[in-house]
Image (cartoon, rainbow, N blue to C red):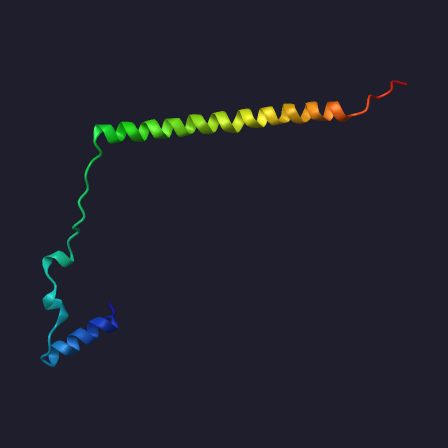
Length: 87
C-alpha cells in the first residue's frame, strides 16, 4: 500500500532526529469522546405528541382546504356563468 506525503514527511523528520508528531498523540486522539444518553420517558412522550400533532394538523389542513377550495371555485363559476338556453 502506498504511503501518503504526510507519513513520508513524518518518517523523514524522525530519521533526522526531529520531533515525530505521532509520539505526541495520546489515546484520546483516537477515542470517541462523545457521550450518548438515552431519551427520558418525558422526552419520548413529547416527541410522540409533537409528531402526532403535526401529522393531524397537516391532514386537516391539506385535504379539507383543497376540498373546500374546489367547492368554492365551482359555486363562483356557477354564480357568474350566464344561464344556458335549451334549444
